Length: 273
Image 1: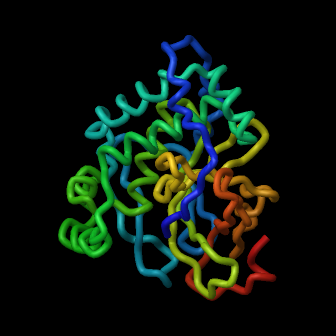
Image 2: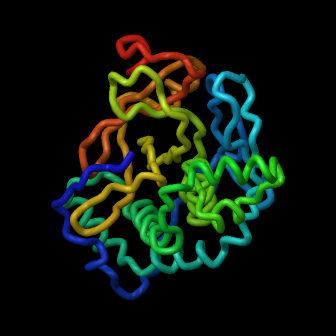
């Protein structure tokens, strides 16, 4: 789903100043637990390493996600370096002031990382409207030996592969985050949810949801889609039930509903919180 156009920001690139020495989110805040199931095919992966096999799909009604991709992440180091360099040019104090004026409650270091990823990704990996069909064919031909680089080279990357790239970049940026393979509802009255991978970010005491696949379209270009929630996403998912958490896009104020499902229909009053 493409986000509708949203306007009203003074472009943050106006605040590119000489690099400053700033601290980063302490790496000890990042969980070392690797993977745990939530509900249905849904799972959360708190760390991705180069060479890992990451589950990215399977039959909708199976309890196990069968399709895997080999995350040959060293192949993408030039991309990560460019995004990191792009993020580092921001004067964090000036960026913090800008975020406050826009009433965007997010750590300026985290926003800089997400903004840089969004901009560099858009430049290096343009969307392919026919990518989904080609992606399925690629996995069919190569099976679980499919490499992440092959998926991107073929311009067939979907949410799972994009979120893998985003999670690894955020690890390099020392942002406490995890890769979440679950489902999404774009409207509360959808009868069935869509499989979707996104990023869970812990910004101090707050939990944010970041959707790297669907940046927010503004009059001044694409911005990262960062969502806030009124209920605790982690606690809700820990119940291991079919649940969707109401989330609000910081920029567009549009709502989406992120969670986990097992392929069955949604009853809003029962499954959305």
